[in-house]
Image (cartoon, rainbow, N blue to C red; front, side, top):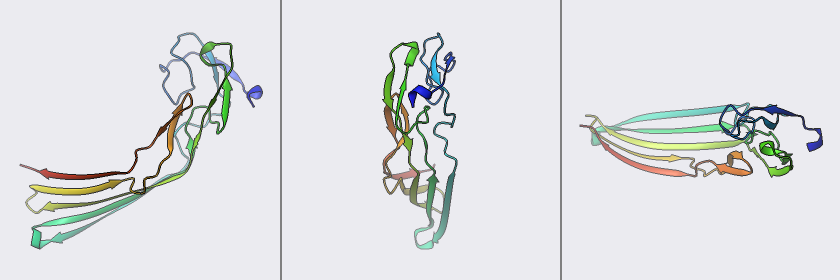
Length: 163
């Protein structure tokens, strides 16, 4: 509860950077909470597994690469308050408590896939790539009650010529 929180006066030496103890850009010390000290946007477990398979295609004078990766991230705090509910605090050295929502980002698994064709002479390349193919959608960070989301599914087609 807010009544049990401990506050310390900490001057902002980071220009109000998100992810640090939430402080204003005011050079005067303000009240900041340090009750929970789990790092922000830093899951305990992250893992990525990727693979590439190259297949020669003599009839096209080139090769095709098939690649994919799966990335897993355990849940993590997306605000510097480490509070999955509401936080009541006295921000920016004021005297009136303010209640704002903060969140914990859920565990997520992202799938990325791609296929690339390259000519044997190295001049031409064509690629079709998909990032976040399953279109996972979650808050990656939050600041002052505003959530910032991950990138949605992105499909890219590239054609390249090397001189």
